Structure formats: structure tokens, C-alpha cells
Image 1 (cartoon, one colour):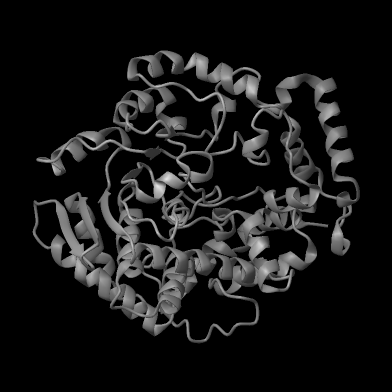
Image 2: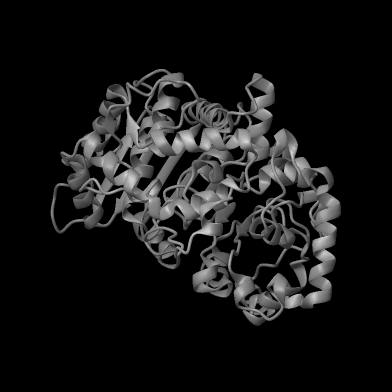
Length: 486
């Protein structure tokens, strides 16, 4: 029996949120097989990640290009959060630098810089090297933090950040807290007794053999296969703490949420890794993605431009910083779930005109996590007792033996069972109603773009494949459902 089911405690679910890791799986924003096809090999591309968060979608998208791609690829990456902007700049420099460590070592260094609380001395020095090199451009007060680094004749990174980000980078770079000091604050957040209720709710959704790996990651703060020694990780990762050594994530953040669990499982099968160690499989999967990105980024003709402004102000800043060149238009513009705060129509009005009219596959991509709170009929509980019980029965029938689960896991708690029921709720009518209420059709008309009727890049929702875009129910197997549900 879990403590949160027996003790009279008030649940405590974390602190203020910093989105250093994605809470939706990495996505390829090109999906060339259903769009440009083989012609993309010789096509110049402009791709905009207007609210990037971490770099997972950038990595996944570039990895979707063929190895023999020989066009010119321009990446515009923007995130309003100052420390996310710093992380992205430093990590991209580590990935593109051909004079640094080998591809294998560079990939591991970046993996830990992104997802581990502590680093080895070599990794710590590599992060510090790039913080110092780019930080030199931010030493002039009352001026934007602007710089450019060229790695070879084909690859460069230019950044246009506010002055405050240069000042923050200096504070982070010169911080003096120790691993022991930073670890105290990480454990205060991630494994505090006050957070036991939340952890046990999450454990209740996992098979017993998968709980050990997650618990081990919480305990060490290092993303490694289970059993791998962590003694050499004796330096704090300054890209994941504040300048004062404060842990900046919340207790339910996990690198597992940032990568497609079905692809992680595929990597596990290909490498013959033990099923019990999901975080070990995740380590190898992320490392593989990073190594592929390094290979491509160092081979392609690549120009990266970094910004840290409000998404709707970015087009004007692009025009200023790229003055003297034709107004840049994009083959993809990805905006994360910013529509949940600004509404979809303002994004369409801002970014619709910036789509590349010469590419019929150009697309503006948005997704919503909270639309259901803003439209009548958007919640599964809005459907009435009869329809709700019908969905419960469908879930029970769908799961079958999975209700008990492989490896002896018990019947799911009512908490997780109710959450799983939402997978059998047809979200399409409520979402289309929401789009109508938000004036999306009018905004599309004014921007001279159209809403696609058939998805060709991102699925309509998690658990429904692109080819099953019109399905009212999930189309994955119960085994896949288990992994997606984590």
C-alpha cells in the first residue's frame, strides 16, 4: 500500500517550473518520407524552432535528413528562458566543434550536460571551456550579448541574446559551489520525504522491474546504465543549477519524458539490452541520436542562429539581424505549445506569412496541452456517466491481461486507471470546436495559409499514428500503451 493512500498528508508536487527537459517526446519536424521526399537532398532548408525548449526536436529533425544531404540548412532556434538559451548555445558548440573530443566522447559529454546533475572532470572542463569562449562576447555592459563562432568553412553559430543573458552566463561560469553543496539541493527537491506521495503515484504506474532504474537515477542524479560506477562524476553540472547552486527542476521532471519510449525500446532490442534497465536503454538511445547529429552537423552546410525573445517578436528581430539579405521564410516553423498561452490565431498571424511559398510542404506546427480546459466538452468527465463507463469498459477490454501486467505487477491503482481512460476519449470534436472559437479559420485566411486536413508531420495525438489520423481511438498495442503511458 502506498503512503499517499494511507497517510493524512497534503500532496506536495514540486516547485516553480523550468523547462530544461521536454515533457513530450522528440519529434522530427520534417518527416521527409511523407513530404518533400528524396528531393530534399538538394534543397536549401530554413527551419525555425520558435519556442525550442531543449534541443531534442532540433536533434531529431536534423537526424531525419539523409547523410548525403548537400543543401544549405539554416536553423533558427529561439527560447525565452535565459538559462535554456545558455544551455542551447553551449551544447551546440560542444556538438559542432570538430577539434574537440571524439564523436563518442562528445556525445556522452553532451548527454550528461543535458540530463545529469554531475559531470566527470573532463566533461566539466569541456562545458567550462565553451562557457568561457562564448562568454567573452558578453563582457560589454549595455550591449546585446551577440557573437559568432565558425567551426569550419561549412558550419557556424551566431547568437543574438539580451545583455542580461551574457551577465547570467558570467555568473554561472564563475560560480564556486561544490558537488556536495549542489547535491544537497538536488536531493532536497527530487527525493525529499515531502515528495514521497508523488513518487509513489508514479511508481504505481510502472512495472516492478522498471522502478529500480528510475529510483537509481533519482538517487544518483546521473543518467547511466544501472551498475555503471558514478564515482568519477564528482563535479556539479552548472548548466542545470542556478548561479547559486540551486536545483532548477521539479521532482516530476525526467529525461524519460523527452524521448519516444517506443524508439527507446527499439534501441534496447537492437542492442540486446536488459529490459529491466529502462534508463540504461535511454542512455544508449540518446547517445546514438547525439552521435548521428554530430556526424551530420559536422558534414552539412549548416548555419545556426540563436535568439531569446518572445515568440511573436522574433520575426521583427530576424529582419533586423539579417538586414541586407532577403527576408527569410521557413520550410518549417515549430512553436511547441505556446498556443496554450497566446492562442493559436496570434501565432498564425505572426508566422503564417513567414512560410516558404515555394515549398508546398512548408508548415507551421503547433500543439496544445490545455485546450480541453477552455472548451465545453473538452474533458473526458464532460461526457456523462454512461459514456464514461463505456470508455472504462473499453479500456478494461483493451488491456486484457495487461491489467495484471508482465512481471507480476498488480492491478493499476484507480488513479492511473482513470488517467488511462482518457486515451479512449475522441478528442477531435472538442479540439475542432476550440479552433473555431479561437478564430483559426479567419487567421489562416488573413495569413493566406490553410489548415491541413490530413496530418503529414505530427500525429493528431499520442497513441495514434500518422496513417490513422482519423481514428477516434488509439491504434497502438497494449504493450506499446504501457511504454507511452510512462
